[in-house]
Image (cartoon, rainbow, N blue to C red; front, side):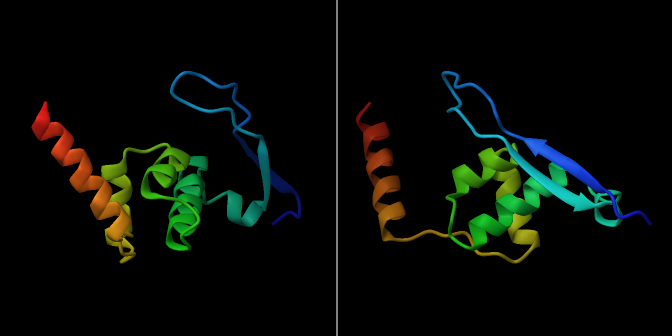
Length: 103
């Protein structure tokens, strides 16, 4: 196995109406690891790890992983990582539900 690195680059997009501007991030992995991984798997693992460490919300983690929230929740369940849901989240959901009822 060689000592070269496999550069993984993502981000660096211009802002759009549904996606904010992002920065380019480059991660270099040794060939022995990169050969077994695809970029989408790395993004998912990064998003799950950042969510578990409470650095990202569920929506942010799903956006980072480029997957729907439902798929991310399923992945969290398979990895036995609890979904973060506190009183602020409950208040927000109740407020949103009340707004829907008023319409």
